[in-house]
Amino acid sequence: MDGYALRRLTIDVETKPNLAYVWDMYHADYLSPDKLVESNEVICFAAKWNDSKRIIFKSIHGDGESEMTLALWSLLDEADVVVHYNGKRFDIPHINRKFVQHHMNPPSPYKQIDLFETIKRTFRFPSMKLGYVLHELGLVEKVETGGFDLWVGCMADDTKAWAQMRTYNIGDVVSTEALHDYLLPWIPNYPSHGAMTGEDDCPQCGGKKLVREGYAYTQGGKFQRFRCADCGRWSRSSKRDAGTHIIGIVA
Picture 1: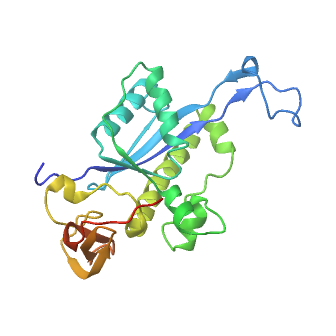
Picture 2: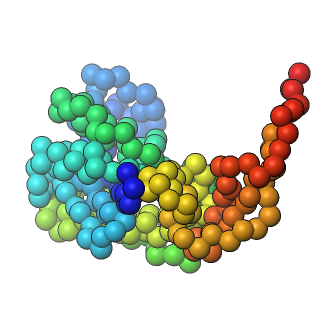
Picture 3: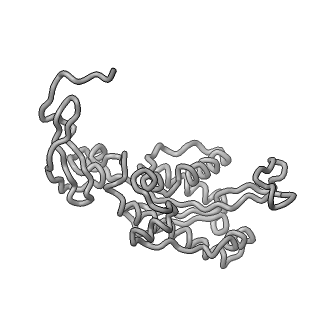
């Protein structure tokens, strides 16, 4: 594993809405399955590797459902880390549903970095919508959709609507990657670069400029603390500098 480079994939999927019969617009909160005409599903995705400028886009319009699904599976199968925004609740479950419908096995395991969870857990923004957070942090602005008509146009297989959807989907990946890079030192439970490379580098970004700054203390010992001069993340040595063989017990 020495010298292994962590493969990080930023991804965003778009789905079409459910289509159903309703008796009126005011009592449609619950719809029985027999009223569902067409269910929502993944219609396109955009993805980008951390070490490439190329953005991959696949859709049911331009590539067909089978090719789009296979491409999506292949990307996830290769990834060590998958970055998304609210993907644990939305993107990944939709993707997994598509895989199982196509009788595909799960891709190889990967770590998910859901930036929505980082925003929700660590900060208090008035809104946690991606566009608002990007604006507040002065990052790449989220591409506007133009409203629900965009999805209506795509469902009607309108070429102009699909061109706009491609721009929107790719824009979300660019924005999500920019947000990841900005929030990097704040993201908890990040997969360790050092564990993959076998080297004493920053576990968060793989940087080599680790500055010794103080110590971290546990009940059992004292550990050298480091700050990464590249990304700003704090880490500590796995080897104890000093300590005790006696620790307290929680009653």
